[in-house]
Every structure is written in C-alpha cells, then in structure tokens.
Length: 227
Image (cartoon, rainbow, N blue to C red; front, side, top):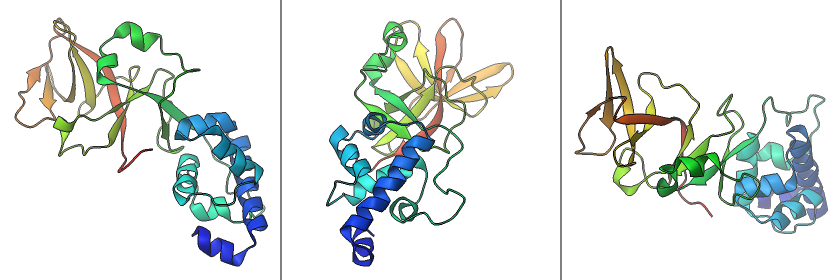
C-alpha cells in the first residue's frame, strides 16, 4: 500500500497527504499528538514526524494502527481529500482505557486512585465500538487458562458502572479472599448463576453476601501482537 502510493506520488506529496489527513483527524476529534502517541503506545516523536510531514519511511503497522483508531480506511488516511464532505469527520470521541493487571484489579483503593495523566499502558478503542463508556473503564488481558474461548492476546474492556444483564461477561470478586474471576452471568429468576469460562471449573450461584460484581465486559479485542 505505502509502496504503491509512493510510486504514484512523490515522497513530498505522500507526506503532505498523510500530514494533512492526520492533522485533520486529530483536530476533528480533539486529540493531541501526545494523546494519540499514548493511546497507541508509540513514541511521541513518531506521531509528531507523521503529523508534521517529516517522516521518510512510515511503518505500515503504524499507519494501520492510526487508521483503526480513528475508524477510517488506510486509503482515506493516505490519499488526498477531494470531496466537499469530509470523510475524516467522525461522530464520537476517540477513547483509550488504562490496562491494569489481575493483581491490581482486586485492590479497590487502587482502582479509585488511577492517575490517568501519568498512566503508561493504554488500550486504544476504535471510535465506533462503544458509546457512553464511563471514565472509570479499564482493560484486562486474558489469562492463559481462558484459552481456547479467549486466545492469548485478548483484552477485555470493562466498565464498573455498567449494569449487568443476562448473558453478560462479568468480573466477580469473592468477598472471602478477594479473588477475582471472569464469569458469564445467567439470570433465571430468582437465581443468578455464574458460569465458568475456564474448562473444568464449577458454576456458582450468586450470593450477595459472598460475591460482588465489580465490572461488566463491554468489548473484547484480540491482538496477535502488541508492541
């Protein structure tokens, strides 16, 4: 794709198209260069060079990540915009959520004190994936024991403010020892069952004095490789 475009246009024109389109995307969605770099896990200088038109050999993986983040095609990102209606304009704000560990999730005080300004690990979410995501949402990476239902590299986007319904995947905390488990919720009034996603695990009956629902999985995303 990049090579083909470079064959059709000079390097200067290619960089100009990319710079103009990326700058427009960030402006339309109120995203700064540092915001985008943080969300995609890229160095700030990489985004700055792309936005300023000073890169000579952009990685296709980087361009694909940017296009996916803003929910536009790679063609739209790289080609000049000729239509009167701006195809880069989107209807919702970009989102990224902090990635936390399974050890951290069991600590209520930790969850309420996440410093979003200085947090390092973020998971970008495509623009059209979720509406009304709360500011307290976060991401967890799947455990090896969750395979094969959830392959290695699966991330769960979890919203602690979402009300669970029948069939949801939910995070359950065992009040006795603080252990956290991912379960599928089955509601058959008056019984609420917590079905296992790990093979050979037992189902549980939800008991309010013993269990606490601490979040609902609203999106799962699979990455073959992150870096």
